[in-house]
Image 1 (cartoon, rainbow, N blue to C red):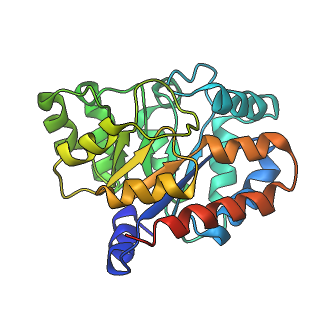
Image 2: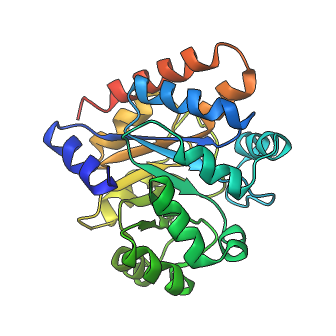
Length: 259
């Protein structure tokens, strides 16, 4: 299923989209399939699977630790695409990674590997829209969404460019800095949701970790929320991981049905 199809489906049901991030291969390649299934059972609408990179500049300590566990467990791009291609799920899949890995693999090969493994979208936090020409063209040719981030400090001119080039959904950063669960949501996030005017769905990430926060973002006008660190924390604990992933996904999704 394509990302746009999922958002259309949820719009008809008056629901926001739960986009759940985990790092593929954390703590082992074999665990990823079970964890994805648990998240989908809980209500995740889109799965964002991190492709580990050794210098993840946009990620906070929680996800950095998950990336380190995955790399120590033997995760590579080849293993990543093999694992993703074997997943038995019909929810849209998104790869989140850094441009060095895409460049080293070859941009065209990377996009075609995404298509072959069933990936619908690509997020590259360290690739500015102004420098994304080659990847953008190849994504359009292969019907893969290229998803860009907008921060509270993004200028109006840059925002226009991002909105013109991005597809699937627009990733709104709830705050400046790196990923990581927070207890509160900044008031500037609501301003950002209002300021970004586009027909492309808006999904808010960076800091959302519970039902109340998810509900706040949907009621503020977002079409989706992105949750990562809260799930990665559960994986790091190693305790009843599948049950707790499913439970947290269910809690978050409940908050998004009150739109």
